[in-house]
Image 1 (cartoon, one colour):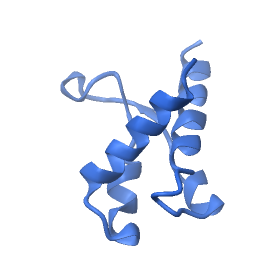
Image 2 (cartoon, rainbow, N blue to C red):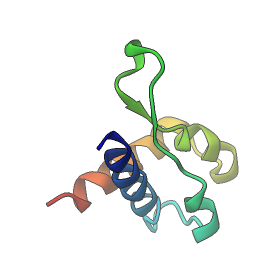
Image 3 (cartoon, rainbow, N blue to C red):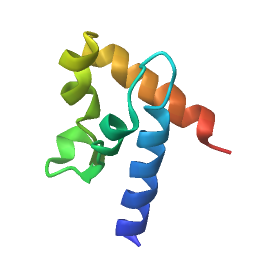
Length: 77
């Protein structure tokens, strides 16, 4: 069941990365993964997509993370 949640969240993150504001190619979006956090101080789940894409997009990671969060929120029922 946890793996199913992880897979669903990975799909949501990848879909959120399709936002026109980010301008990412499909191949770049497919590199995003969601993992269970090893440290409870970082929450239960995490993705390093914003950090990994910051240099490529020439945007601060916090701005990319905001786009991911907004995109995920928009995709939820």
